Image (cartoon, rainbow, N blue to C red):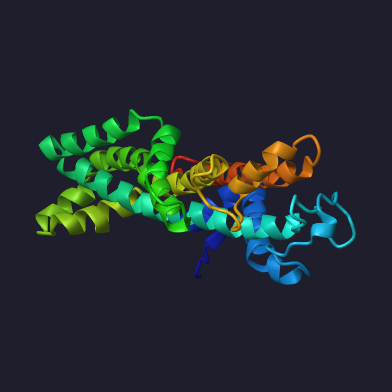
Length: 291
């Protein structure tokens, strides 16, 4: 008689991680909000009757729910909802692209420092410590003031000031993994150092790297908002959530909706990415019990 073992009794690691993630309600809510923000930013402008740069002087400072202007208009009569969606494209794109660049730099530096150790590892990590000594926002604003404002420069500057924490996480993970049996076996088989680092060690450190990536997106969105708010980031007439706040600061008492809309969007995006990072951390932790 053959015995059939139910596959659900022995879930795969991916299935177990998904089950743990689903139990994290805040992470699920964060993931849903991120998807909705991304869809609204990508598709929303095509569904509105107004372009984000369309000016209607006769309808300046129209309050929310004023006819076709669901979130009102700004000081030039531009539709706030259209600008909010186009600003979402810019802010979310900067956050994601800056995260990818920062993760690439951080993984590269952390992998070499953790694997080689010694003088090379010490020099690389002291470089990380030296950059971390400077407050991120002041370093970013200083660099932004020395360059021409724009989408590309803002993205690169945010990435250049966000990779250090990733490098520290990766270095610690690689240093802990390099003495494990699978790494020693790879050395014994004659694998090159690069292959061991990026085919054996880094994949086994993917859980904290994924968590760091989600948190890095949230940080990048905030940094873009800071820089654009101070006038060194995305320049008008292009919209971003940060420069929308900058433009709205002198109208806080007369037209508060101009600041509320981008402020709520930034809060939702950053909070959602943080919740998503918390959920991924719990889901990818191998010490969690499968239920």
